Figure 1: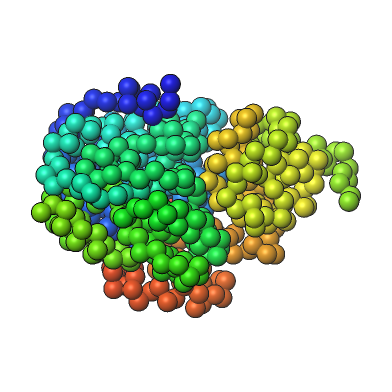
Figure 2: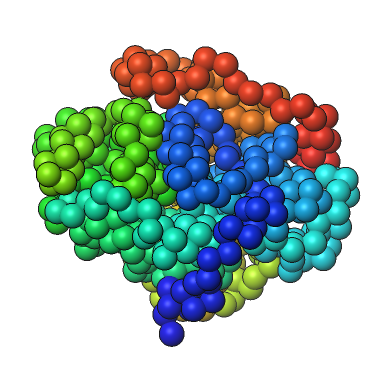
Length: 314
Length: 182
């Protein structure tokens, strides 16, 4: 059985209202959503409001350490996420939503290591001075939407189907890899974001670079490498006729959106591909005003796509 | 090429890596699957499977000074595809950590290492990342003051660059974590 099928079988129920009403849904925004990727948080909170789901920010959360911590200091890479997880678990939460792919990856990795390594667990819980028992479910954005909220509930909110729009879902690395720890979708050919795209009424575009790396954290330190990798992804998407790209990761968004003009100049070929967060695309299909979804916050303007949506809905 | 310098040194290095990695170097049978799928292989001086073999052979100096360990972006494609389930991505973390602790700086790829260091400093002083401060300090350290600056005006206009960072309330807890593990 494919991983994605297993996921659907295991988590198809709509449990969000119970958890939300009981105040059991913790929210870990992470640093990017408070800074360069503020559009992700704005659109996320807006669609959760429409879905009538309430999440609560983990009090006094700290940075998960992202790629820097695991790259040079393994203990920090576990301890920094562990503090957030312990605050949430001891606060009585049952589920954590981490919309940033890197954050969800680091939270899940720390949780996995604390679950499987008793010696490490002792060392870490001594340092953070809080107990932790790995009892919560930690969800990335797609896992939360499909597994906790449920496709049926999302479908009921689609007021303005985006039929005629061609959308490429870009997953990148951290949502699906390493599969042993992420336990989410198929690591080579994931489909969950495409399924959400299909719910909005848009047409999911198939292409080759769904899970190829964009260059991630090396954006500032190795910009040429990042532009080569991100360029591969964007030109492949363009070749397959997509109107726009959707992502569920702030770092992917930064590389695909912020660096796009530079990539066009470097490879001397126009792209003009707006990059939206999946939450923004869902919001548009719910009939929410693009301004309320912060779509004007992107570097590559989405005006042409928004106009196309208006024309298609007439 | 001089490979094995001393059998005892070889064993020490290989077992240090294995104990930090919680995996066995001998699992790798050099099929090269990791290197074939690596998105940054074109920039590396040694491919990932070469790094594994060199570590097993105790070529500590070459491995810790390689460009490869800093170019790896931890995308996990290698570990996901490894037919032996070897922690290929994990070994890069382990080697970087050993290099960092020994104060070894890659001559060619020192900027990647600097970025990680500046990033963790930022977490240590604020509990969260303040992007503007992070980028500013990174630029000062690498002296690439003007690279990427052309992006700044539009990012400011779009509201992507926040002028003020957030500090967490219990910064003492973060200080303790750093004190325990740094």
